[in-house]
Structure formats: structure tokens, C-alpha cells
Image (cartoon, rainbow, N blue to C red; front, side, top):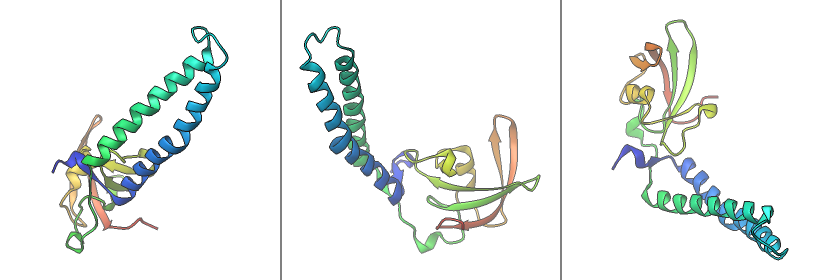
Length: 160
């Protein structure tokens, strides 16, 4: 199984929720607005009709993508065998040489979110961390050069 097809249970639920919303709510609303715009007459100069059709194509494209993607994804749940080491789904506390502390969670490529500090399993940071333990040091190649990080904590639930 490819690392590209891994997802957390929460990540899958989020994608399923998006699919449900697009199919049951947004697509219905846009279809209704397109129908109303079409009833106004000449479609060739009807901006609302054209915009609605464009948005409908975007929605349908995303729905098709999500359906195919959800079929390919494999949920990875926590196992007690992971305790003490960094694996998929782990929250990790890191400290750099300047004493700056950061928290990251290692997730699948479909759920990475910089604002949530969720990094992809395929990122250089995650690849350097996988299999490591507390007090291990990792060197991560970045555009600014190599950076040294020490692992302060590993857990399989969010940091408080």
C-alpha cells in the first residue's frame, strides 16, 4: 500500500462530509439557480446561467475526485505497538537549535493542513521523523539548508 493512500479516521470523515455537502446541499442549490437562470431566456448572454454551469462542472469534478479517492484510501488507526516511536498519525513536539518548539501531526497527503500543523507523510520533515523516538535528533533538508530538530515528545492524541 502506497503512503499516498493513507488517511486518519478523522481525515476520511472530513472528506466524506465534504462529499455529502457537495452532493446534497451545494449541487442542489446550484442546479436550482441554473434552472431559474435558464428560464429567463437567451442563455448565450445570460451570465448567471453561464456562471452556474461553470460552478456545476467544478462541483461535479470534485465529487468524482472524492468518490474515486475515498475508494483508494486506507484508514490507519493507532496501535499500541506504535507507542514511543513516530509513525503515521502521531503528534510530535520538536525543538530546534534555537530552542523554538513546534508541534506537528503526521497525516496523509489528502489531509495536510499547515494552519492545523498537520504535515504530509510525504514531507521531508515527516520522512525524517518516521521510526524515531523521544530524544532522537533529525536533520531535515529545507530550502534554507539543513535544519536540526530534537524530538521532545510523541503521542497519539493532540497536545493540550
